[in-house]
Every structure is written in C-alpha cells, then in structure tokens.
Image (cartoon, rainbow, N blue to C red; front, side):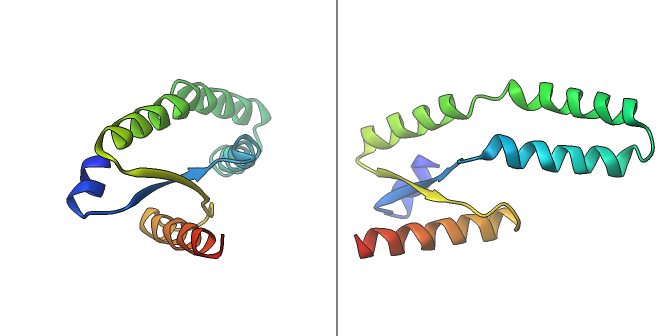
Length: 107
C-alpha cells in the first residue's frame, strides 16, 4: 500500500476509522449464522464462535502501525476516515478517500 502511494505520488494514505466495528461485525456474523443454520440455535452459536475466533487472530492495530511506520519512512501522510460498511471493496476505498479529502479541505 505504501509503495503504491509512493508510485502514484499520493500525498496521503487513508485508513478506515473502525468506530463501533465490533458491534457491526457481531450483527453481521449473527445474521450470517441465522442464514447458514436456520432453526438451529446451537449450530448458530458454534458458527458465531468459530467465526469470531478466526477474526480475533488478525491484528488490525499491528497492520496500521506497520503502514504508518513505512509511510513515515517514505514521507507519506496517513489519515483516518469513516468507511461505509456496505459496498464493494473498490467503492469503500473510493468513498473513504473522497470523504477524507473533503474533510481535510474544509478544515
């Protein structure tokens, strides 16, 4: 990501602000469990538990710190912005970049 920012001569990298991410993820996981295991509360609980174990191993903070460190070495600023939950990854990236640009411009 940092090398791409440098390659495209970007002034900054925008990282999503994950406010209330646990709540959003919990509701999405529960909805998925209900779709995959309709009528079986035990199977739904197992699905939720297994899914949460999978995502809890991933350290978002460690990833962000690595990005910040590399960006600082290359002189690229790192900003935070709100990312909508529903959209394709490309649409999310576009929306967060535009929203952060506008908030920076108005500040």
